[in-house]
Image 1 (cartoon, rainbow, N blue to C red):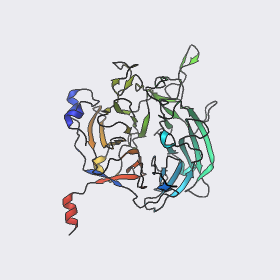
Image 2: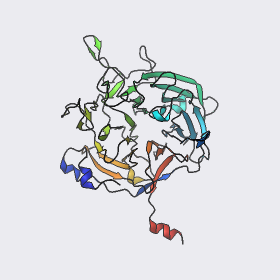
Image 3: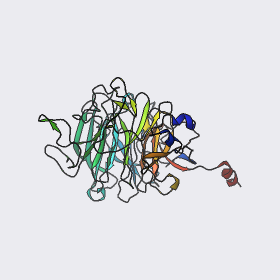
Image 4: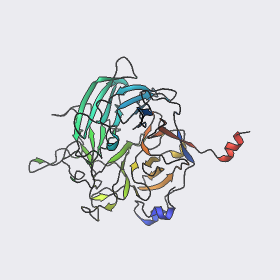
Length: 422
C-alpha cells in the first residue's frame, strides 16, 4: 500500500506546501481483474521443450476502424488480433525472425505499434522493434494489411522509415503513437547503460534521449518520411553547422516507458523511468527540455547536475524509489464503464506492482488527486497499458499462465457477495 499521506507528500512534485493538502490520495473502490480469461494465444506454449516461456504481451491497441478488434503483440514479435468475444487469437503478423528478444536483454524486442489514423481506407500501420540485422538497433517501419484478409498483415509490405543504432541493450524507449495533428510521435531512449555516459539526453545532434515527430504521409529530401514544418528544431545551425536534428520534438529524456495522447484534450502524457531515486510524469511540450541527465525529475543529478533548473520543464508528478522503481505510463481514461475514472491518468510501477489514477487540474496547473487502485493478490508487474476503441483501459503483465491482460472493475463488497449466495 502507499505510505501515509504525510510521508508521501514529502516527495510530491508540487509548487508549494499548501498544495499538498489539496491532493486526494484516498484509494479508489476499484480493483484489477483478468480480462479475456479464457482466451487462447495461438502458437504460444507456457512450457516449450521443458523451458518456461511466459507470455509477454507488450501492448494493446486498436485499429480505429469500427471493428472493435484488439491487437496485442508479444515482445518476441508476434502480433495477435482478436475481438472481446474471441476464444482464440489469430496471428496478424509474425515478425519473430526479424526481432531480437532475449530475456537477459529484455528492454529489446518488439516494443511499439500504431495504426494510421486513416487505417480504414489505407490499411497502414507502423511498428517499432530491435532488429536482428544489426546489434542494439531500433527500426520504425510501415506495413500494410493483406488485401484478402483483414485479420492478416502483408508480411512483404515492410517499408523501413528510420533506423537508430544504440550503444547498449537497455533504454530503447519504444512507444509510437499518432497525435491529434496526424503526425507520428516516437520515443527513443538515451542509449542505455547508466548515467547517460554519452550525454545523449542533452545533445540535439542525436535522436537518442528524445521524442521525435515525423510525417508518414510525405517525404522530405533524403528521407523516407517528412519533417513537419513546425517542428521546433528545424534549421538550427551555428557557424554553418547543423546543431539540432529536425525530427526532434522534445529532449532531455532518459527512457520514456510509455507516452500517450488524451483522446479528448489532445494532451501528450510522458512517463520517464528514473535511475537512482525518482520516477516522473511529464506533460508534452514542443521543444521542451526535460532535464536528463542534468536532473532526475526535480532533483540535481550528480556529477553533472545543476541545483536549479532555468529553462527546464519540471514534471507534474514524481515519486521516490521508496514507493516504486520503474514507472509504466498509461492513458487518460475516457471510457464510459467507470465514470469515476474520467479524466484520470492511469499509471503503475513495474517493480512495486502499485497502480494509481492521477488527476491533473489544467486551470490550477497542479495534480489534485493521486489515488491508488489496491490489489489483494500478488503484486502485478505492469509492463504496459492500452485502450480499446471505446476508450476502456487495460494493462498487461508478463504471465506464465497466459492470463496477461487485465482491466478494472468496481470492488464487490463482502456483504454483497454474502447476499448473492442466497
